[in-house]
Length: 302
Image 1 (cartoon, rainbow, N blue to C red):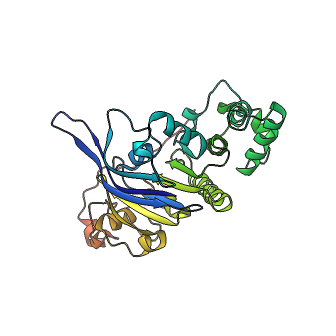
Image 2 (tube, rainbow, N blue to C red):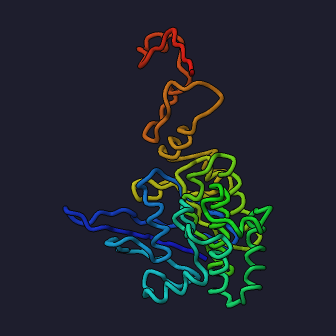
Image 3 (cartoon, one colour):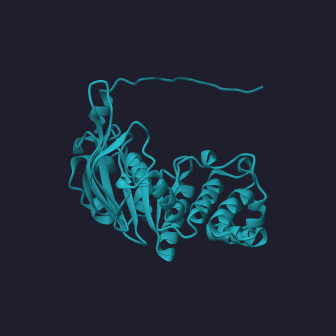
């Protein structure tokens, strides 16, 4: 469904063009959840924006193809790519508050999208909104429909945004989820990515999940692409990449995830691939100078 080949994206710079994505190739099939992971600035979101024709100016695609159902979106004009966004492509941004109007209820915002896309009358649109909200996990959809964004928790807001994303294209072929769980706690992160995976499987929708969080990305993805400095350095089935990483950067990302199995001498960084960073010896701890010491501290409130 989505096939990106040798994509190169540049931005003009004072000393010449700056390459932010370099010969990146990836694919997403129907019903598949594919992850892109890497540190901030790796080029993950830039690829997502390029897919939907919303690359920030003055950036431009220098070379490569973005094939969606066989059509190259890079060569499409603004109107053509706009119709594609409205019918088959949809985007979930990382901050749901920026995607929702604070002056409208959730029902008004989802219903507006449903009406624009399907032409349903108000009563039928309301039924569709209720069904969508139930579909994304609202146990009290009527209460959610009557709520304004500030009255919902972060997890509920992101669920509402997902419902709008589905409604945008009635039944999209591809959802691009750009850091959709950044502002949520761990339990809600798991719920949101699991929801996306369930929707993908049941509705045969492809999902491209962009994240810098190794824990999140491994929860629901079928395949994984690892990016660094604009290049894809490793890819494969998620289980294979996690259990048998071949690139030093991937190993560094995995080791940078804190563990409860033992104390670390210091956190791993993606730049290091040093086994000696694991639990320190008593001798090593004894020679360390503490950064701060607290003795006989008492705290009271009156």
